[in-house]
Amino acid sequence: MTENWAECERALNQTVIRVYDLKGRLTRLDSTTVAAFVTPDGLFQLGHSKDHRPDLPQLKISLSVLDPLGLPLTVTVVAGNTADDPLYLPEIAKLRKSFARSGLTHVGDCKMAALATRADIAAHSDFYLCPLSAKQLPAEELDRLLEPVWSKQQPLVAVRLEQINGQGDADEVADEDDEDSEPIAVGFEYSVELSGQDQSGNPHLWRERRLVVRSLAFAQSQERGLRQRAARAVAEIKALNERKQGKKRLADKASAREAAAAIIERHRAEEIVEVTVKTETHQQQKRRYGKRPATTVSEKSVQVEASINQAAMEQTVQRLGWRVYATNHDTATLSLEQAVAAYRSEYLIEQGFRRLKGRPLSLAPMYLQYEHRNVGLIFLMTIALRVLVLMQFVARRNLEKEGTTLKGIYPGQPGRQTTKPTTEMMLRTFRGITLSKITFSGQTSEHLTPLNKVQMRILELLGLPLETFSRLIPQMSKTDFHSRET
Image 1 (cartoon, rainbow, N blue to C red):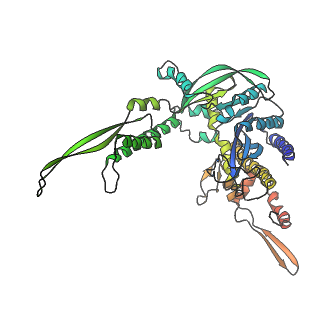
Image 2 (cartoon, one colour; image 1 turned 90 degrees about the vertical axis):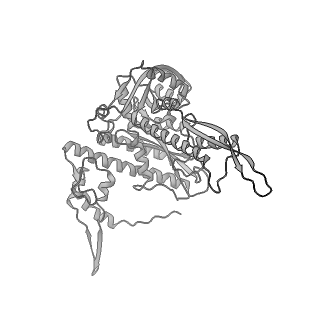
Image 3 (cartoon, rainbow, N blue to C red; image 1 turned 45 degrees about the horizontal axis):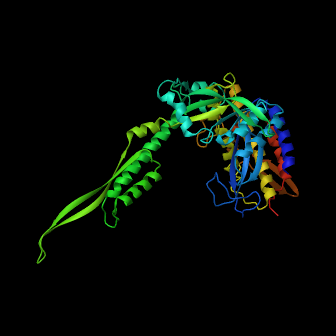
């Protein structure tokens, strides 16, 4: 099945790219998991779940898509306990066969940044763009790179939305552009010489540019979270001193420090929150009572104090939001601004996963028992995903060519217009269309609900003649829908 699908996939890709005149040279690669209600066996294995269901066996789907529309190009199904790192090169090799050329740019996450993966991509005259993980670039090395920035010796390039929108890689970002000149990111770059072996074991030398970029919005979000966690940790530590009925008191300094450390660890504020523990002695006078003489009783209590180390807080804040991206493109073919734009559009492949596993196609969770049927279903669903992506791309492209908008696709808002309709919104307008069959005196008559203006407009945007709709009557009449697994 896999070999036959690879041939079908290659032919389908070449046809779609030719028919729709897709000249994109940028692809995106990632993987996702799909859980199933089966016992662990074959492809279905327990592993790291991207759907937060570690209790269920799963299989893993490796997918590549074409920019800027997110069109699925290749798909591979592997066991659910397979690591992500070795999935990239086989997918890239399939892409080379589909395009029958080199010079493609592959965008992936930090798991694509393994040195062997980058070496093989460069050895085949292709290009890569991916963030480096802490393994490729330790925190100490990042601090060394940022030291000139903090001392104001390293100038930074400001990246603005207008620059990103001008690249044509981030369609949805353009809607957010309110002509604000504030930068969304800052950064600088440097280059290194690298050496590594490709898949065949042949050594390869190449130059890699490293882009040190700080997303300002991400840094602000991280800072808010850090300050909130630190404040909650301080409040909870101070609450240890409260005396309430039924609340266990701190026995000694060791137990107090242990309780405070647990709170700090839970809120991930180890370097920010400082704790001091002291013992206070209180003397209480007890009056004479009967034959008991008046006495002075000493009582010890443990007090915990917590505060935020502002110097450590500021030092941590200045590290937030920074990430280092690696690419073997030169500056002329991929500037720092273009690299930021390319990686910001990573939502395109995530959108494909949401469609594949969410309501449009509802692949997850899987209930089929036989492994080959699950693999076949995934292959079939990726064809449906291609249809969803192409419908959206064609409609938006034709609206852009016409300089017009589409209205009537928002429920309850007939006058609302858009230049970027989604496939799901357009398909929703076709709900309620019914094929009626009436048999009288041995003769059967058929009636299909006529199209309204919005539906006809959508067909026009998709380049489908109205006769296509009327031809559905004889086709649907011959179709019997039976689905079962045996």
